[in-house]
Length: 432
Ligand SMILES: [Zn+2]
Image (cartoon, rainbow, N blue to C red; front, side, top):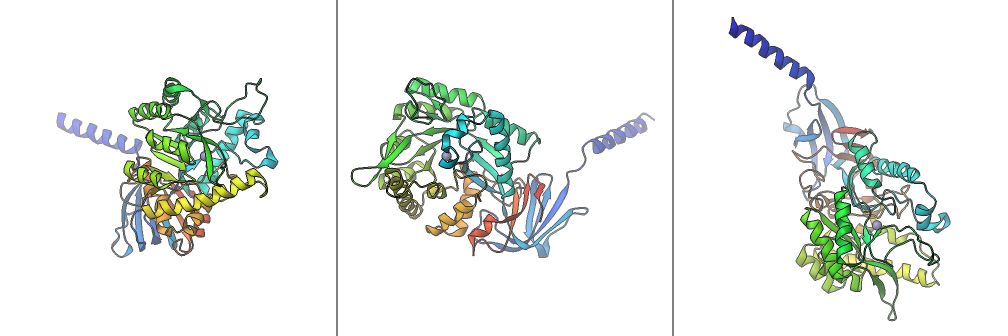
């Protein structure tokens, strides 16, 4: 009798558990062509099985086992790829068009709630365009707002990509906007200002304490055309200041992204141990050799240097054109040398109304193979973000961050500007 009662009780418990935790939903995607983010060749007619928010299997349609009761999604006329990663964005920045007050208007006239509302729209736009992950490299004076937006996305309150955020960023006195105002005025700054290794380490500690996933450092600031027609960039932090930040950040198991254009500041960035060089407009041979030796990532952000050029006959206009031309040479050199190049745009510097994927066209125009450019925005970005195998790949065990485009992006990279279908974390965000 006792045994029967126990069995009845056990059956009841199992039943309750089964009712309380329903089996994860199963979805099946039929992909006409699959670019999986890692393999060098696409595969035709693949079946992707998703259980909950994870990819369970990827197999040839001919011998795929379709689980009973699975939701069927037919993308057999499309090219399926992993969700894309933009590793250099600013969701709190809304363009720097001089006609709209330039950079300063973002900080001087917009209430913080307006900036948060617009950041919410930026995040949504990124996801709509197939960018399921962003590394957002500082809020430009909006403090720790990125932490809040990340919480809102993770809490399911607003749609948006997976965010890796850098919070406030760090530069030195004389090393960041706002500037050019009367010296008597205490102007707000778009980054946290720190001078000396003690202050620099403290700034990093504060930002890490408040949840920064990465630390962003400005290693150069102003730039101009030098006496011999070369691009000159004003260096900011010393090697000692940067080393304090890198040492602190690495101790927390996090990485440091360094904005660096050229010359002294770029070399200090490398000597100080930056994990990624942002922009890297003028990479000399020594810089490239050091990047290879140290395994430094390169996030070039090409497209943004073709926006908002000043008039050609002005010093700023000449500088703007020089920046773009030396950048092209640097990118080609880095590509040839096999530097680890990762896709990044500086969206925010580019208005969020523009296509994020425009950066792909520049990369391909400057000699990168389309598959290589796609991997720069998928599996390679995942490695930089310590998310290898979890994002940037359509393979068993990865999060189900998947997109689809019409046509063949390997033939025409511009197809990636027209993403038609988006799934993040197993949920369809944008249908056909
Ligand atoms: Zn930037």
